[in-house]
Image 1 (cartoon, rainbow, N blue to C red):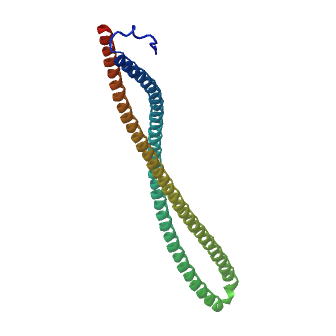
Image 2 (image 1 turned 30 degrees about the vertical axis):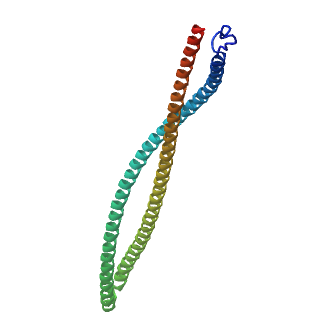
Length: 242
C-alpha cells in the first residue's frame, strides 16, 4: 500500500481543514490495514470451513458405507432367517422321524411280547413233547438270540435318537446366540449413525455462522472504501480551490 508523505502542495486554503482531512486519511489507512488483517483472518476461516465441508463429505461417505453395510447385514439376517426356517423344517422332520421310530419301537415291543407268548406256548408244548424237546430247545435258543439282537438294536437306536436330540438342542442354542449378536451389531450401527448426524448438524451451524460473519465484514469494508473515496474527492476539490 502506497503511503503519501507529500500529498499536498503548500497549503494556500484552509490549513486546519487540510490537516483534518490528512488525519482522517491516516486513520482510514490504519483501518484499511486492520481490514486487510481481517480479510486474512476470514480467508483462514474459509479454509477451516472448507476443511469442515470435506469432513462432512467424508462423514457422508462413511454414512453411505454404513448404509451399504446395513443392507449387507439385512441380507445376512434374511439368510439367517431362511436358514432357521430350514433348520426348523429339519427339526420337524427329525421329530416326525423320532415319532416314527417310537411307533416302530412300540411295534417291536408288541412283537417281542407276542414272541414271548409264543415262546411260552412253545415251552408248554416242549414239556408235553419231550421226545422232540432237543430240536425245539435249539429253535427257541436261536429265537432268543434273535430277540436279544433286536433288543440291542433297539437300544442302539434309542441312544442315536437321544444324541440327535442333544444335537438339535445345541443348534437351537447357537442360533439364539447368533440372533443376539446380530441385534447388538444393529444397535451399535444405529448409535454410530446418530453420532454422524449430530456432527453434521454442528458443522452446518458453524458454516452458516461463518457465512453470516463474512457478509457483515464485507458490508463494513465496502462502507469504508466508499468513505475513503469521498474523502479523496474532497481533498482533490480543496487542492483545486487552493
